Image (cartoon, rainbow, N blue to C red; front, side):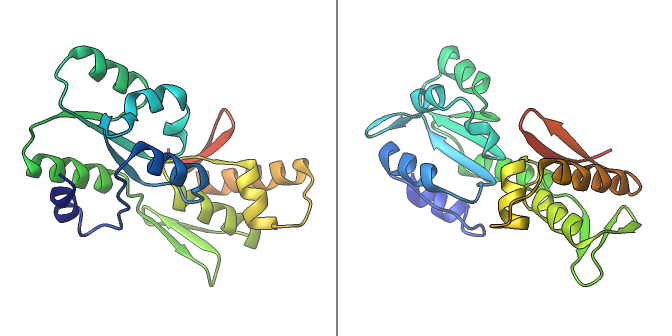
Length: 200
């Protein structure tokens, strides 16, 4: 099966894992959120469904998850979807089916946003606005992680690095950025502990 996926997903930057242990180790130290995760429920050293149950917030750190399984029972399918999986594919499957679903998901995730680092301007749907340096850096982070959210800690670490920032100051930057983005049809949605970029 790995060869099949290596062929199907060759146009994309992919990392493959053989075991749940290997995946869990890489996941725990990952700094970049994956855009798409494809996982077989039955791995040589454990169940991915059990891992999902033990890491119920995993979907906050991955844009989309597709589960693949040889189990046709409704139980595992429902549990996977309830725990954050986007889709459930039953084996045996037609390789083209997976390819089409992956392409559709990735195409739908694209946000037609144009960022100009020279002028700190942003264009969306033929409308533009100019940002401050800090606002532009924050927007760049939001765009890079779209549609997954980023935390205040993410912003502080990336934009201000080792400099201590007053939380009120960060709130002001986010508020002013949100106001400017509304002029071009974008919004920063605050979901629990994360900030997510979205079209209005």
